[in-house]
Length: 176
Image (cartoon, rainbow, N blue to C red; front, side, top):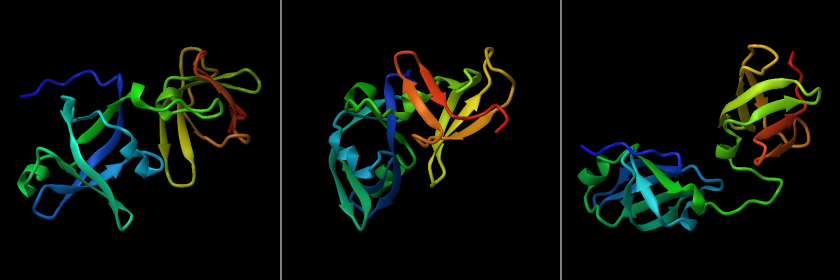
């Protein structure tokens, strides 16, 4: 049995989807935005053991990503990988312009509103289709014990952020 490794230096970029055909191909469910950006990376790890994998190819067919791992040549082998998570090292991510931020950098940030009230810290970022949503949970310094869902819409609700200070400023009242 493989031992689970610490994934804090890694970021989830995809999941193995269902198999396609008989030769080890599968649908790759990319979490990148846009999904095709996954082809930019090279050092992939799979599962909780973070075992290295080498893609023979990742290609687009009918707006879906189809992949094959070099060492896998049969449908039964690839079925054992279905739903496994695929990671890369965070250090492989490209640097972003000053006005953009990665989701993993938002998680754990303290959230202050325009009145300098502490709304809590960001627990997770999700997307329900229309926009990214920040789940802000209360912390010891929070003004109350309310959990909040704040849309990540720049220049409307999101005023600014600082990765160095681990701080997000929002136009969001405590009573919203």
